[in-house]
Length: 253
View 1 (cartoon, one colour):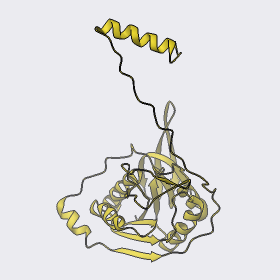
View 2 (cartoon, rainbow, N blue to C red):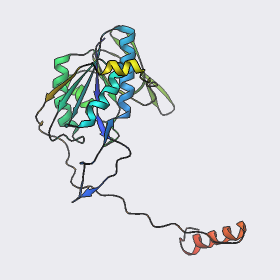
View 3 (cartoon, rainbow, N blue to C red):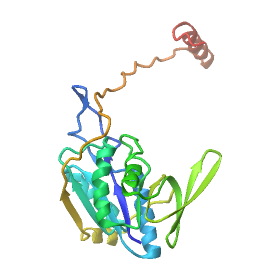
View 4 (cartoon, rainbow, N blue to C red):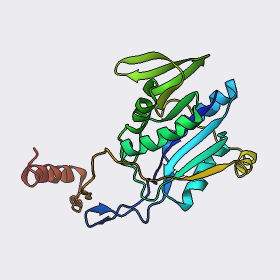
């Protein structure tokens, strides 16, 4: 089974956001693999171990010194190769334009299965992979927490309110993965060393015509006011003072 995994590079969660003229300044961002996509890589590797084939990672991103290091972490846990689509003015909030470019690469590869994380932790749009499925004309199952494969048939389990939904589909198909799908393995030292010899193919791609909504302005939330120290000799006095402040100043009781 040949599996293509869609990888998105997203700002590290420790990144500090700076707003310049109503826009987020991304120049100082540090990037890492979208955490949901790591579950997709693990599932792809498990299928390869069970059924043979190879795992190809596909990412669309700007040129970044961190990208190769992050991608090699996924090669170290069992992926075989990377196709890195470099786009000069890449933006992560254009699922329609990005899906168009990714779908063209997938048409060339014709994988048996296309999987990725249910969403990116940058914009939480949950849109790119469903759009890819539509462009390729293949079935799509969202938010799978478990996948089973029997020949050309996939069984996907989805957590829904009050229970589990079980869906069956033929391959090729597009699946998005939830965080409860598996436990991502840790790479052994020998696998880390071997990952340095695995191929990363760089391809320059032009911008696609965007059909997406435009982000016109960014802003940070208002700064919080300082806290207030409750004074009192005893715990009872402090409680009484807190109640007074809530009643007279905050006016919430």
